[in-house]
Length: 487
Image (tube, rainbow, N blue to C red; front, side):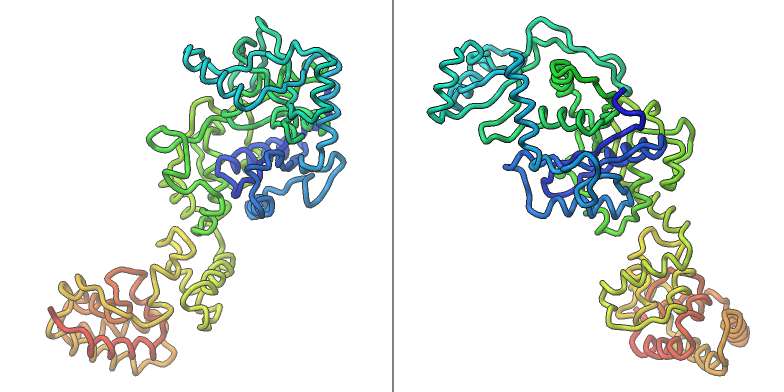
């Protein structure tokens, strides 16, 4: 047994941002570890230096911490199996590559890029299923190899894949999988710059870090026979594999940046709650076997099972994410939302204005059922933060009549008599004026809303008046009478 304790890893490459597919992989690994009292490890696979992006590691770690997927071992917290940067483990990979050379399971290849390109083009002309190396360097004598190395000729180290073999393994998601070795290339293990390829480093690290389950995206399924071969030639126990389904756009194409946001940071910056994003991502290819769609992280841990992961691709439905965000927002306490709203205000045009907590809590209470994002508590109701800067034209056309100014003046006079008015006081004053004028409530209430908010929709009228306050309400009525002209 590799380890009595389940050990899983999330092993991203630092290429700039955390893809939502990467977040799902991290989440499924995290859920599996927590459900089974195991360990969740973060490993940075940074051996492809051509794709390395400065600051990407920090971005990855910050994104995971924002999502509260705390790893048990990793770059900034250490652990018993470090280092957790592959670029700091080069000697380990070379040692294992040398072991394969000595066993005759790997060989030096000195072929130039020009020869490899010509070989690939020739195979494409012949319409072969895939381009493969032709084992040209497998027959080079030890003396010739030694001479080429001494003279500084560039080389790579390749795995010697035996022909006519069936490579098979069982995948938790996809079931029994078989590949013919004739279709598997003699993969490069060590590149000419001395760095390992993903395949060698991945297998060596998973073995040395005692990884019990390799949970990763379906795009790595075709690489798994190469990994299985490496486990076998080293004589190591294989971990269990689980390949997660692809993420798809609504048109069933592979999710890509060309068709929208794919970075976790993009969704965070757009105001999506981490609880909603995790809830949404968890449902991309997994379900608990029931109709439940709303989950908190602890519920996901309780219900998660790799056996319930689907094979077919999962469609990234932005409308569903928006719905989940609204649901999670509404389930938050007003005090939680207050902290989030104050943070949004600090980044808004109102950052230099002071709003008491009591005032903001009233705004939250009145708008909570009407918004999907915390920023909507500002953008959808700016009238709570400043007087109307303009008035909705359709509402003017429909509701602002020649008699409206006199009706609103009467209402303002009645409001001015109130002392510390409650919502009920505003409502009683409104009813009194309506009756005295002998007009239906709708004839006054719509213009009143327009005068106070500049809009035709919003929270309850008397909630709105109570929150804004008597003096400001009267001031806004006067301003509206002066500025709005019937069309």
